[in-house]
Length: 183
Image (cartoon, rainbow, N blue to C red; front, side):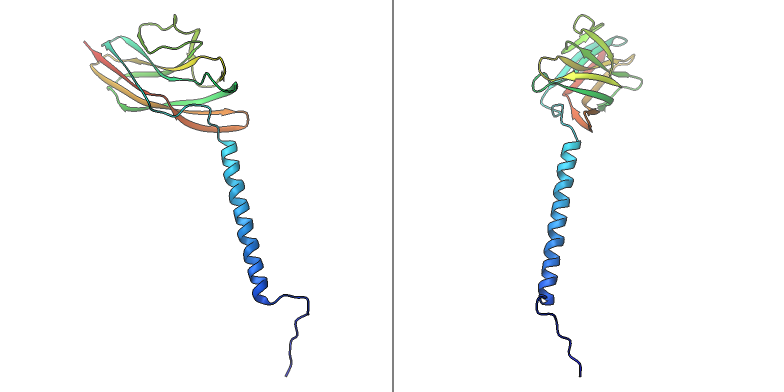
């Protein structure tokens, strides 16, 4: 009969299994923590959350209405964001209504008919724009709505896909904008 003798300095098998299990659990927790920190670090939060208000405007059928949807941050540290895309969250619309999202630089509106040039330093499309937000800046996302039919257009918020530094992500921001068209 042959006996196998374990070396004197080697721990029993149950200790080795326990140590291996503890090391695997510790490694998985470390990887999970790094994943969470990496995700938070890579996904920006430059804009305020959606909700908290409502703006409305009554306009004549055939007219163009402008409604301020989201005031961009004016406080906090200045940062440059590149707007990649902006998509309105429309809960009600009129067949054939035209809805465009614009950037009002250097100003803002509640709601207006006709032109908003006197309220904004400049008005421009949002996609591909480099924009400085934060301390002392004033910009607003504005919806331009036109309808040749009677009815209501309701925009609940906007989803902005953007990058700042090496962070990239999307956020939903803004308030509910209601535009009613009547003859």
